[in-house]
Image (cartoon, rainbow, N blue to C red; front, side, top):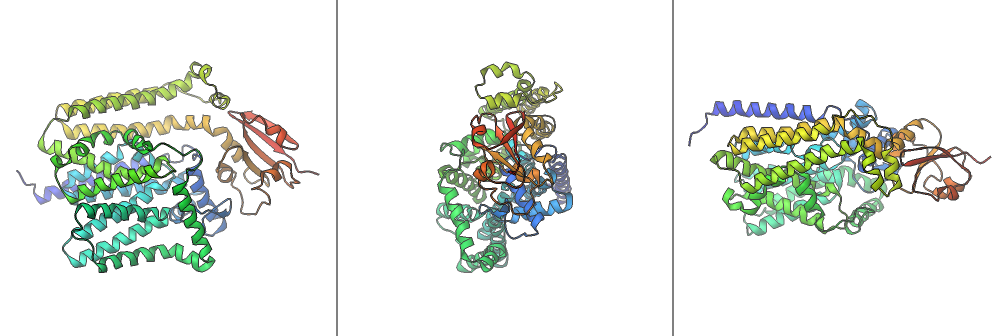
Length: 552
């Protein structure tokens, strides 16, 4: 086998790294503010950051200026920092994930380069860039991309710790593992530590506890983890007592054991989400799942499989199932897909037939859906007679200007997927990979720019426009019959306490001292009889908008 010259390796590595960084900048940062934040999670988290900026209290996480027990503050610090720089808007709320998207791609490249070679790291990075859900998450304002990054680095450095022979490096790796798992806990709570511990417990069982960390390494890990966590948990306990920690942990346990409203899903939910949403890497990784030993036996590949299955099983047995709960599987899944792609490229072997067939089928399904959504929106009269939900019908009647070319995005994507598969069949593997992953990234970039803002107009546009129109006014504003955080963020509620706002009866029937505005879905036919003196302002989309003047 020919050995590459070190200078060529360095040049190749710099070229790959430059491409990765430029790709991240181009695909993740532009047009982040093109579409409103989506209820619930995006607006929920952005509102917590906004309230930090409004109050100047960066230690207490709040929603509606009340304690918010669900999440620690690290991600909101990042968002609040961006809001201080770029204003309170969608771009600032999403920028932390876009930046972490670039950092993640670079990290995957560096780890892949050390694992095998620069080419392996490059394939791992572009496969992550060119997969549906990971790509979308880096353009969102949800916590998970940052949370997953810290957990993954914590797991990686602990792996380095237990596989290195140098005692000095080993302690450094244990320290870094504690640091990053601590940061994951400050981002989303103790579930980061739980995933870390379960993954390594299973790993050491497979390894028959060979190279299990000694007490010194464990103490170093715990010390760094505790120091990082102290910056929030410890200070909160000092300032507010153990009641705060008790409330936080109680909420986390309740979230794990009891389903959140509208989020109770079947056991196999995450398997379906990951297999469909992680096209095309979920298909490319299948040969490594089915016949792992053929593609090499090593401890890191074992750990990536364990991490994948730990997350899938853990969040399949929880009662609350939300799409992004399984998002930590994306990085190990991309690694396993890279193992297969690198193997076929290195050995110049034919891509398995069932992989080709599934790629064609998956490409067709996604292309069809991408093309069908704008087509149906433009020709909505074709489906309205079959809809039995008045809210859906009214939402579709929101005036939205379509240009007519939007469906071509889906058709173009299928053509590009087929072109990539033809290249695979010709054993032009690197060209095929570039075509497949970059066509997915380009498709998503264009679709998010041209289609998603128009779809968002149907779902929540009228309500958000209404909230925005009330900015700076001394009023109450409240949704009736559905949960939302949009009224806080888009009406830019002030920190001034509003007596009775949490009590709907007070707003609907009480002696209010300022106007109260209500957003009500048109399916709520009983609202008029429950509100004293409410006047309908307008009906737009699936919402009715009311005002109740102060009682004189």
